[in-house]
Length: 288
Image 1 (cartoon, rainbow, N blue to C red):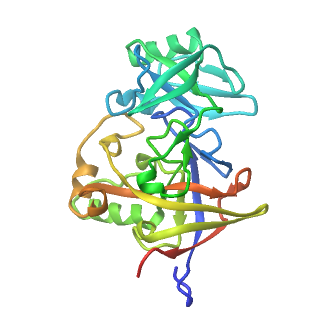
Image 2 (cartoon, helix red, strand yellow):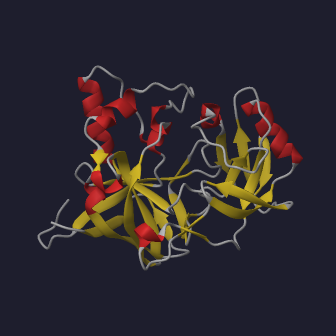
């Protein structure tokens, strides 16, 4: 919604974290903001025998791994598997792993976790935890003078999209005789209500009112979409329907004509503040 002075007013409709990169997300009513995004988001990652990250792009079954965050542990469940319990404070051997072109300090989570993921994904892999002392920077090409930190995300701390953007896609899918899809396919951290479809593309800094003060996130880059939105998170099966539809209307010049959905953001202010569903958010447009 636009106000007479040009501000955009929205509310936090939903919040998600993805504790293990490329596994299922956890929907939350409240999440603590850290300098690397929402707490526990992409804090763990699955790597191959060479220490390189693996994702749903090559292993769609990762979508079926369901994390649950508890007070002192994360519990992972998957079809046909006993639950795996990971203590939130547990780490083991220090290792170096690779995310895209970044070499990142991490901690191996031990042989039990490695065997659990290897059995389910049917290839040798290991689970690692991000080393909080490591500073992984987002691309300065997009963040400019602001230093954007993240953990094991593809490159930025927070992904923001809107209810209206998903509704617009689903209207187009319905018109083509296809079933609606859920926002979880796009793996956002923050979903905003009260915007027009894809208005998030045009926003500058997002100011979120919390009991501790105003948290500030800056939108920095449209999110180019890989094939993961084509994967049904309930079944791990992939069809090209979503990607094909987005191709008809979401090619975005600023990312070289790639299909984009949602905006990557970095944290400017508000570390340790509590984001909660229903909180108000305001922003200005980057341009008219």
